[in-house]
Image 1 (tube, helix red, strand yellow):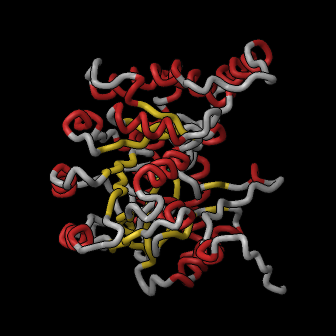
Image 2 (cartoon, rainbow, N blue to C red; image 1 turned 60 degrees about the vertical axis):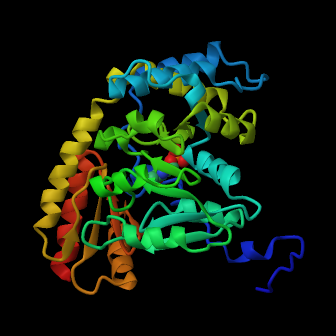
Image 3 (spheres, rainbow, N blue to C red; image 1 turned 120 degrees about the vertical axis):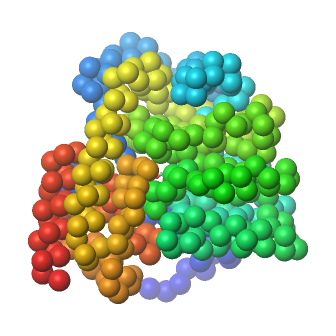
Length: 376
Ligand SMILES: Cc1ncc(COP(=O)(O)O)c(C=O)c1O
């Protein structure tokens, strides 16, 4: 194919490797999809019927959505306060809504680093969108390697990067609690380090998997005005299809994010779906316990297999590597073998990440893994 000449496009974008989601083809319902860390459970039918009735009776499709998100923010503030048992901790001024937390990551980068004003620090393996979005905005990402034993940060190395005379200096650090793909929560040293970071660096703590880990740093926010917490409705709340995430931070940071976001970034239907799941969280969230029970079952089965090195998980997914020759080719081979059996997992961060499915999906996965490994 001849190379397109696009002199109007930024040259650095030609080398950008985008995030490639698994294509959803017509037969996707026959696939066992364990690649995106979603909840394996659809919304209960009673809530879907309610949502459909909103579409029929409430939604004026000719009108723009509510661009203030006020009702939603109040419900979220309530939920967040409830999770830490601090009724007054945050209110709607501490929340900004995104079209998925991906949108908020982009807004954070625009607010801190654009125009050569700052660079980003991450520790790999981690969620790839931080680096991809930074690159798409022409922002430099400094990457350090995590310790391979427990995937904690090498804090000396991180300090070295921060203290180097970087041009532009590090302005954002993305921490994930628990991390994807490695599923470990922040340890005490890392949290202490975050508390002592200079206040001219924004600390983003991504708690996309909070409902599974039950570990949060939300109650620390009032003590650290340079901290921001990201959460999403795409995982435990079962709304990945609706694309809703939120940021929690001081009202001053939130004001800036609100300036940057597109005025109608959240479709009305997604707003109503989110309000509905929040109001019915007593129906939605108990499934988290089932997923975590299943995670333990899958983990126990996998660690018995000497072909794998498997890490403990505080989330709804498990990270593993092949014990012998954990090369990219061998991980790809293993992933392709599962794909031939209609099971989709993710090859990322020099290993394999497997999301926890329903009991039947996990049984199917484990039976196929046994068949594949028997042949190796
Ligand atoms: C750590 C982390 N942050 C953010 C996201 C994106 O979430 P959202 O669907 O809200 O854009 C993901 C999705 O997998 C994730 O793993």
